[in-house]
Image (tube, rainbow, N blue to C red; front, side, top):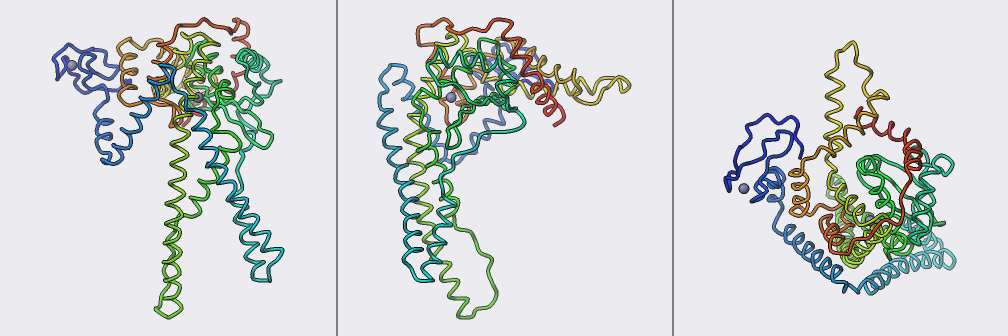
Length: 440
Ligand SMILES: [Zn+2]
Ligand SMILES: [Zn+2]
C-alpha cells in the first residue's frame, strides 16, 4: 500500500533472507525474494483471526475456483449448461411457491367464510411482499442520455456490433472503482455503469476493453441477472429476511394468557428457525450452482473483451483493477497540497481546477508506480485472492487465462477526436465526482 506518511524506521535488509530492500519510502517495504511483508502485518493478523470453520470454507472455495480455472484454461469446462439448468429448476420451484401461495390466497378469498377471507387477504399481502423484484431504470445524477453523450454511446454501439451483443439502453457513471452491466424492469432495460475512478485510471484502449467486458455480459451465457433466476434469488433473500425470528419484548406478569403467548412464541420461533435453515440451504445451493457457471461466464467476457480491444488492452484493464487503492492515495495527496497553500491563495476546497488536479494526480501516481510496487500488487492479489467482488474470479486468474491464450489484435479503436469528445461529455461528471472525493 503506498504510504506517503510513513516515518518509522525502514529495514534496510530483509529480516528473513537478509536481501537488500528497496529504499523508496513512498511504498510498503517488502522482499521480492522471499515475499516477506507481501501482505502487511495488519492484514495478515486479520486473516489469522478468522475462525477455523470460515478459513476451511474459504480454502475449499479457493480450491474450487482454482480447479475451474484449470478446466477453463484447458478448454474442458463444459458443465455450464447443467449448472444453469439446475439453478433454473430451483428458481422455478421458488416462483411456483409464490404462485401457489397467491392461488391459495385467492381461493380462500373467493370460497371462504369471513375468517377465511381475512386469512386469504393476509396471504395475498404476504405474496405482495414476496413478489419478484425486477429493479428500476436509474434516473437523475450520473445518468447520460444519448443526446448528452453521443460519442460515448457511439463507441459503445460500435463495440456491441463487433461483439454481436445488444446495444446498451442506458449509460450511467458513479464514483466506484468498478464497472457493471445490469438489466432491470419488465421491459428489460440494460444499464451500463461506469465507475469514473476506474475509467480515469485506464488508457483509451483499456477503456474499450472494459466496455467490451461489460457488453459481453449480455452474450456470455450469464443468467444471474436474468428475469427468472435473478428475481428468484432476490425473492429467496426476501423470504429469508422475513422468516428470521425476531426477539419479542417480554411483557410482565405470569398469567395463564401470558404463558400461552410465551408457548406460542416458542413454537413459532422453532418453526421459523427450520424455515430459515431451509431457505439458507436453498440460497447456498443456488450460490454454489451459479458461482461456477458465473465465473466461467466472466472468463468468457474477458476473452471477448480481448477480441474487441486486444489481449494487451484486456490485460491492462485487469491489471488496473488491482490499483484500487491509488484513488485514496491521490485524494490524500491533493488534499494535502490544497492545505499546504498559503491561506491568502487558498481557494475553497475542491474548486474547479482542483477537481482536475485529482484525476491528473491519479494518472501521475499510476504512471510513476515503480516496477517493484506493481510486482507487489500483482503478487499480493495472488496471495490474498483479489476479486472485483464475490461474483468474479480472482483477478490474477483472469490475467493468467488471457496470458495463456494466443494474443489477439484490437478490432475496435477510438480516434483521438472521438476520445476527446468522450472526455468532454464526461467532464461535468468527472468534476462532480472529484468534488465529492475531495470534500468527503
Ligand atoms: Zn527476503
Ligand atoms: Zn464481469
